[in-house]
Length: 237
Image (tube, one colour):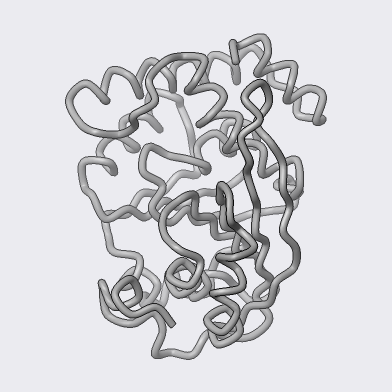
């Protein structure tokens, strides 16, 4: 997917990018590739692949959810900034928070944010399990996203405690999303969530499957969750 195709595909979905925003994506790509030479951020470095599998894939969430009505978004385990930074470029009024357990990635994201002249971005080097226990973050966010971080049963424990009541936890998955959801139904209910919907689409050109699992936060998450760092992954609910 070249830049023109990227712009056209988003335009067809109602997302119009200005020359400035397109320039931000270009800067994002070059910054990502440059930093990737000294630290492992992504295995995908070809321009057309980055635009399709990282940028387009991240923004595709906005085809099924209105981010113009969202004030605060928290991205758990964002890695190189996906999906939150592409969404921030498209929707500049979003206030985004990224939490990642690797400080090197946080350093990259802070540099990237400055390079893109973004405002309303906050970066935290922390484990999701401890971050979600902090009073100034717990049940604070309108939307919490996670993209290809862990199984749904694990992700739910890491993310739902950060979602405010009536907010949304959005898990971005490749294939087998329905099976993952089925295996996580107990955890989702226990943590105060309920399935809203699962949206399936295919990336253009290569037709690989993608799924968006939308979980509505209905009840306050019990204080004991998330459990200690590492426990959700070792012993999913």
